Amino acid sequence: MEARATYQQGREQRSHEVAGFEDRARAIGTARLVLAVLALALVGGLVWGRLGSWAGWAVAADVVAFVALVLVHARVHDARERASAALRFHQRGLARLDHAWDGLPKASARFTSSAHPFTSDLDIFGHASMMQLVDATETRFGEERLARLLSLEDPGAWPADVHARQQAVRDLSARPAFREALATAGGVLADEKPDPAPLLAWAEDQGGLSPALAVMGWVLPAVTLAVIALGFVGLRGAVVTLVVVIQLAIGIAVGARLTPMLTVASDRQSAATRWRSMIAALEAETLEAPLLRELQGRFSSGKRRASEEIATLERIVGYVDARHNEVFRLLIGPLLFWDVHCAFALLRWRRRAGGHVRGWLDALGEVEALASLAGFAFEHPDFAWPELAPVPVLEARGLAHPLLPDGRRVGNDVMLPAAGHALVVTGSNMSGKSTLLRALGVNAVLAFAGAPVCAAALRIGAARVATSMRIEDSLEEGVSHFYAELRGLKRVLDLAQEPGRPPVLFLLDEILHGTNSRERVLGACAVVRVLVEGGALGAVSTHDLGITALERELGGRVENVHFEEQVAGDTMTFDYVLRPGIVQSSNALRLMRAVGIAVPEEG
Image 1 (cartoon, rainbow, N blue to C red):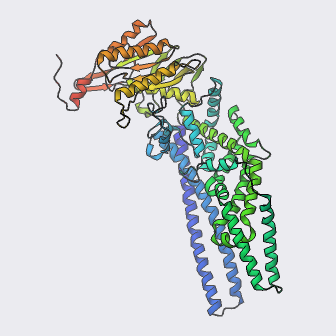
Image 2: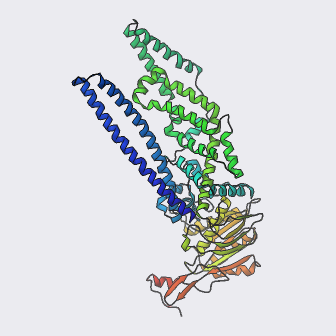
Image 3: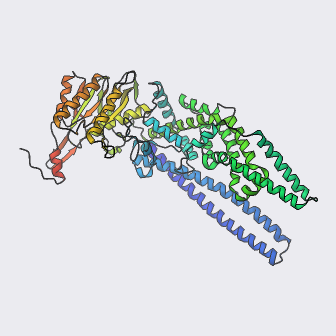
């Protein structure tokens, strides 16, 4: 209950803060309106009412007060945004605890791929998925790094890299205040996650500008300002006007040429403020896990700390964004060659720091992904940290599926003692066969990512997860259901036969159910035999009891286990407890009758 209490307390505190800032913002808005009306009245009195000189001073004081309130209003607005982001951190934590999927980010469906060995079958991405249950990232690169961890695209060296992630996740799970600060710094733009690709492309570009343009940026404005000054001491107005017009035309043309580069670096595109705040929070935290300290060290690899460099970029970008004011863009900017000076300031920054940006964002994304897994650990303190074995093995006690709510989960003990071992899972419909297979796969993914697992204990060795469970045919491609399943099985077999790689952890649900029972038994036995003899380990569920003969044929390398239903009168229930041996009952006809399909009684 520690996580729930933390989130509830944080939600109440941040809700109060947001309400307070909103009250202050409304009060300041009212005061600004009063000052604006008062200024208009004073100006009117000066023009038409012949008020004394005091009215002029009053107008000046009114304007100063109005400007001060504008600045204060901006600070209150920023504080309200930060408080709102912190509030969202706690609200999403509660939503994850309650499996309230509609209150969680929904963008992970884009990572789903039917060609991936397991993500579609194991509900890794999309609605009500593991990504939704874990994701607490606020940046696109953090989200993408978390997706790579959960799809095991780069698991790293076994067991060193996984152990390093475990240590990092443990460290961050004990730091809810830091994780809130990181999410708050990154959450000021709500669910918008800007793509850093344009900024990275600019930062790593080796191009430059002509030195002559820099000379023009100083000489032409100086000449133009000198001509304007001479206009006050006698130079003909036509000459001054001509020089100013020429200068404006050149400045506008040069600015148009520089617009693409300035736009890429603009704060509207790069979200530099958000990334700087997140990096500053990370730089300031005293971390203990070696991986986190290594990542933290990347932010000080240059001459200055990353947050300082990005703060410099932010200031330059602030100057760049002055061009969004039409008067400044069409008059003041061209007159001073403002865009040229901003462009050269950006180029100086790029030469000094541009080569580090990708490393900074990669490190920040890694920390965000680890912080998401840490939040998952914080929210499930009863989940076990897996023991990483030096040999292929999967030994679990009380293994269950983390996507099931606490009150509905039933843990089971599962034993795959070595490579070349498999379970054949039989059981009646709805008894838990598919859920067991998915629990095996999902918990293996969590273990390899560096997270705790939904089990009382788990000992696992290096493996590559591969599944064939949800089969989709395709009218567009002319692929039947059975042929689609064959392609999935072939993918699993091909992965299992790759030399020099960790063994495959295979999970096959209702194997070959698209053909007749005789061919199904023969084909399923052949597939399992090839996998087991090739050193893979895993489980296959089936309704065909003929497959259970593998236990005898393969000399104990295959074990039969089953689920069963309990019947009391007309009531059928399930306890979802895994038992040794072969199921002795079936419930298909009983379920058909339960939904109103008339079938004759047996016998």
